[in-house]
Image: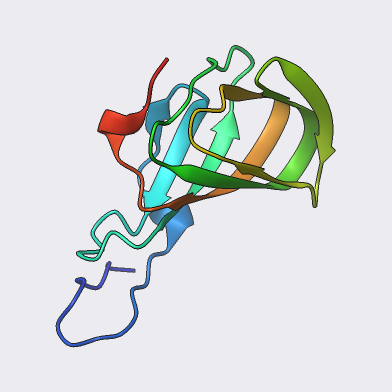
Length: 120
C-alpha cells in the first residue's frame, strides 16, 4: 500500500506501520510513522526490542510505551518495573530509560520523534 502524502488539505495522515522499513535505534528496530507531519504533532512507532537495548533519554520528547507483545522490564532512571502485554508507561523528558526482554512496543512520541533528541 502506498503512503499518502501529508497535507494536501487533509486533516488526517495514514501509515501502514508494518509495511515501513525497519530502522536501527538504541532499543532495537523501529518502524516510525508520521515523521512527515508538517505540524510535528506526534509520531508513532512499532519497536522490536533487542536484548542489549541501550539506556537513552530525550530532552524534549515525551514518549508513551504500550506493550503489544511479550513481557520483560522497563528501566526508568535506574528503577526496573515489570511489563507485559497491555502495560503502558509515560516517559517524560530527561528520564533515562530502556526496555529489557522480548517485547514489541507501540511508542507514541510527543512532539514527533526527532533523531537529534536521542541521547545515549
